[in-house]
Length: 274
Image (cartoon, rainbow, N blue to C red; front, side):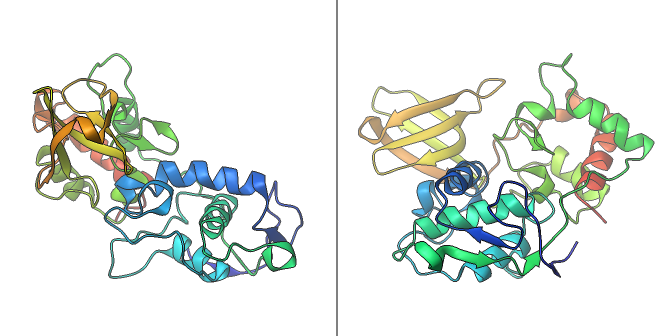
């Protein structure tokens, strides 16, 4: 799905062919989307202060270029394109939020941008029989340990691990089966396991959800579902990132080989795999 030159009438924006990047409601929507999709786990840190990716705040941006990079990604880097995951309105909302963090936030007429680029809203593909079985297994509420406890796809599930619409994109079912059975082999960028040792003597490991100058928040992988725990930096003795995944390595005891194959097929078809 590529960007196409066209004017877009976006529901919720002020006009059919423009967007107001200074709109408080649009910026608020973008802030929420950024925290969910672009912050620590996806590189750019809380409020764009940087994590594994570059800082986004206190810089000068061209809004049209920022929109394009957010939608298409940057080939050859770890920056993914979000056009198959988010609607154009959501990408413009993220653009408005990042622009609000700029050293020169747009205001007045300078904040009004013509919509010269648009793309279709993401559509759910028609799934094969195997993929439909995999979808049922992915969200199976009868199982305490299930994929959706830690992963999200098409807005459903829990965003502890990477968004699988992004992480599974372009992968074959066989590659995804390998990812399930050998989670430490290929770790999604930004989701390396963080280990935290507290001054109280407690040690935990999991997924870093947010880090600020004063606090860290971690999904504790020792429990299912992983609880989100918050700690003051002053209470942390040591924090380190490890070259391993927090995803359990015994999912072959949770699912049969046929079930894992169906789940992999579901992920591949849903994310536009090869």
